[in-house]
Image (cartoon, rainbow, N blue to C red):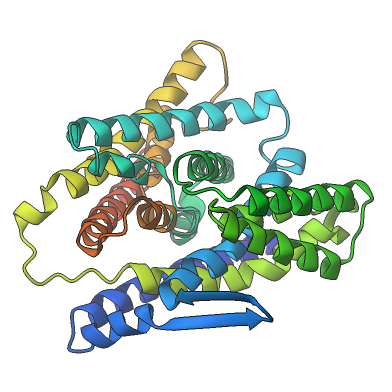
Length: 385
């Protein structure tokens, strides 16, 4: 019980840090400091070792560097859940897997329908398909005991599978200009990670060295560098339970990701200039597609897939929960902040379009979080009655 309460507090405080960073970005971007905010993100930083150099803007260092650590934690969580968590076995994984698939396909279809005929806008079809783990779990932490533990585990499992699908989309869709040499070297790095896992090597320094080598190779290959973080996370051994390298790495990384990396990413990406914004801005095809996809598409896809799976006998609803409670959780999956913004930065480079992405994601996430919280409170009151 104490461990669960500690985890709840961590999720809550992490969500608060993310919210504060988001609000700070909005305030700064719409204040006289706005030009300095833009200049800060455009500032170039360089790492040079001999003839090898990496020169990127601060914005890109956040997306390619810090987010690789975020994806390292995602890879760790995916592996833990699949080997020792809520995704162990076909029966346990069936409902969240079906729900995540529905919650990925329906929002993408809605976004595509709204933006049909615009090839440029269609590049962002995956923006509306991603659930933000940090914000969604933070809302559950705020609601406390009103969210049954089995539904909280279901939400976490759906979000993790959702992230896995987003990772696959990033690898297959948002990859351009491949370098075969760098890709081959990245393959060598991944093979070394697999070998370290097979040999059950538990020293983090070795994984760090091989992981950095793999990250640089992936960065130079044209594939997005964050995928190297996923590869390292999946390679960490789980043997030894709580004392395994994977569990130790998760415990060490989680506070840094929750209280530093994700808030920094939010601060760098949530600064939407609101001057000149109007209802017409919100109803433009790109933000409208994102809002409709995340808010309506997620709840329809997740809840509809759950109902179909239970009716067909493919999966069972979490024990002791009602269909209304499941619908309330489906609403929370429409919070698509971190991963949606990240995919948006991969799909588009035009700053005006990125502002539309940010606007759509912020509005959809706010609507989904508020509607989900109200639905959880309503269903809890109904069950109490």
